[in-house]
Length: 123
Image (cartoon, rainbow, N blue to C red):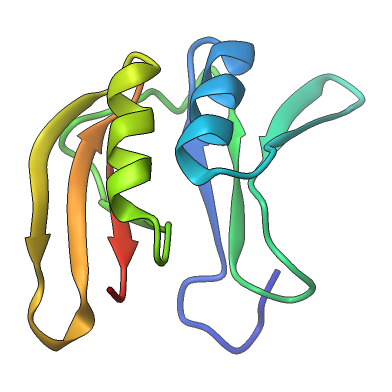
């Protein structure tokens, strides 16, 4: 986990881990890796070294939501492809691509598990 960012990790709640891994791998254009330990398993989101990251996590006390915190996932340079992948893999587009001032563009989607997620690109 990154120690230099205010946000250092995100658990994205899921109902069906394998379905969520397929969805996020398609949307992010990179493999989400299934990992496990004693009594738990999760899908590790792609990241490098000490970059902020997160995982897809099936937990009894954490459920998908359309109204909780909005997690932004970087799809820099491929926002349109990510929106198409979200649609093609069972997601729903809540807000189409739109500018967010000098910070680039985003789209807000509903993933296959029922989470509202923002996809972000600087272009």
